Amino acid sequence: MENILFRNVSSNDLGRIAEIECECYPPEECGSLDTLSHRQAHAPDLFLGAYLVNSPENYELVGFVCSTLSPSQSLTLDSMANHVSGGSSVCVYSVNVAPAHRRKGIATAMLREYISRVSAMGTYDRMLLITHEELRPLYECVGFEFVGPSSVQLGSKPWYEMRKILARSDTGKCRAYSGQLEWYSGKYRCRFYYD
Ligand SMILES: CC(C)(COP(=O)(O)OP(=O)(O)OC[C@H]1O[C@@H](n2cnc3c(N)ncnc32)[C@H](O)[C@@H]1OP(=O)(O)O)[C@@H](O)C(=O)NCCC(=O)NCCS
Image (cartoon, rainbow, N blue to C red):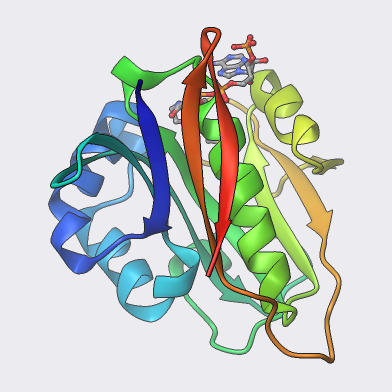
């Protein structure tokens, strides 16, 4: 049985992360190793990896999602370039799954896991991302709402902004947990383990 484990990436993963990024986007949209390293260094708790568990000692990175923080209520080119510590918006970039592992439900489960973890932090007001039209159903399926055309111009296709409102919590962090995906009837399904 194939298993997928979610955990925050380490700096050792950045080489493979940059490779996956290049496999996922055309050159004009692809984040550089420097950009990805900057996000991992400044917002490590917002940089989640999906690992295929080949054996207890062998975890293969097959996808990731990362973000920066911004005080802006809308996602801009500036928020893509800069991480503003204490910002109330989690600006999501690079929702990526390596080509060989697509259409098995990994991105859906990874986004659900990501939203759960970030929501549990209780410190942010909203999660924002931009997408092309065809991926709108993927994000709506995990709870994002369609906002409208984005001001961001990158590459030749138009971008649309999507948003998920998050609840702040006065009670501090929720319990930490990790999610694990199991292969079942042609798709992955998620099981959660609480610490
Ligand atoms: C987009 C991406 C992350 C999806 O990853 P994935 O693990 O294959 O996604 P899932 O298996 O969870 O897909 C769930 C549903 O989303 C939709 N979906 C996924 N990929 C899609 C695509 N390329 N085009 C249209 N719809 C898609 C489908 O409805 C799919 O359900 P189905 O397989 O039953 O038809 C992956 O294709 C990728 O890394 N692409 C390149 C990078 C990218 O464009 N990222 C998004 C930036 S906004």
